[in-house]
Image (cartoon, rainbow, N blue to C red; front, side):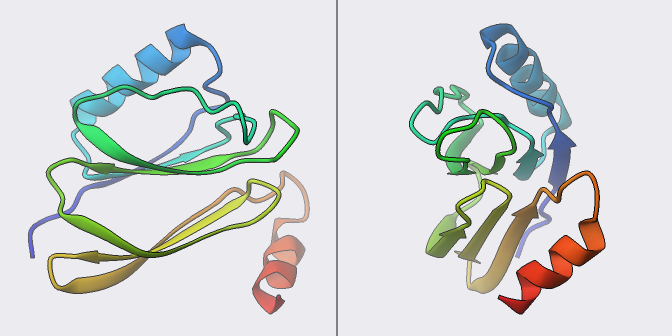
Length: 128
């Protein structure tokens, strides 16, 4: 198994091309292997292309009708990732990927909790 760099950002919206370009260039400089992005603000049927040569595997959880919330897990092209199972909630707050990297199975989870009542929200979510 190789070293895996994990980067997490609250991007506060990626709907403008200029901001997407800025964030993707910043992420390229950091050189993480796995990205966790929160608050992407994509609608489920209006996810823009996120073109980058370095990150080729993009997985989204978006709200179906509101451009709020939203989480992404992106994986570098240099990491041999096989997605075994994917789960996303209907609110665009949770994305869970069961993956295999080389011969190791992992669960990658990206969660964007509400601004208020995070503990009770998380406990209710985990009980479901």
